Length: 99
Image (cartoon, rainbow, N blue to C red; front, side, top):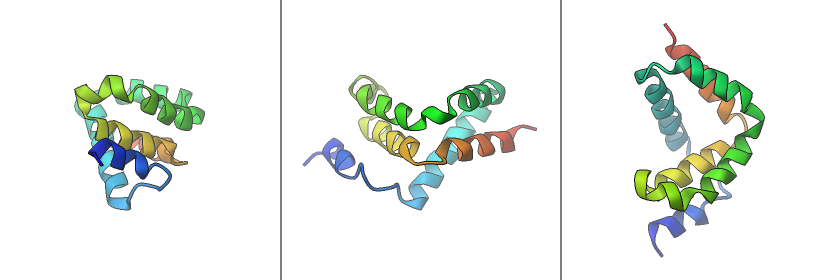
């Protein structure tokens, strides 16, 4: 069984707490490093109800983005977005980076 099959086998299970924390911190840091806090907050607030739909879109477009960022990373972010409250937590983390 290859790595992408393993990632999909775990789809129904929530991400481990350490992995969830790492992904949220990395996303908030990437936004802050680029100085895109305000646009990111607007986009996240507008699309807050669509977190689960975004996770399904990530799975759908995974084969397209997989070669660019890694299929396992795409699947991890898809699992993260599928969890309720993820968008709210990401918004709070980005707001925490605004000086």
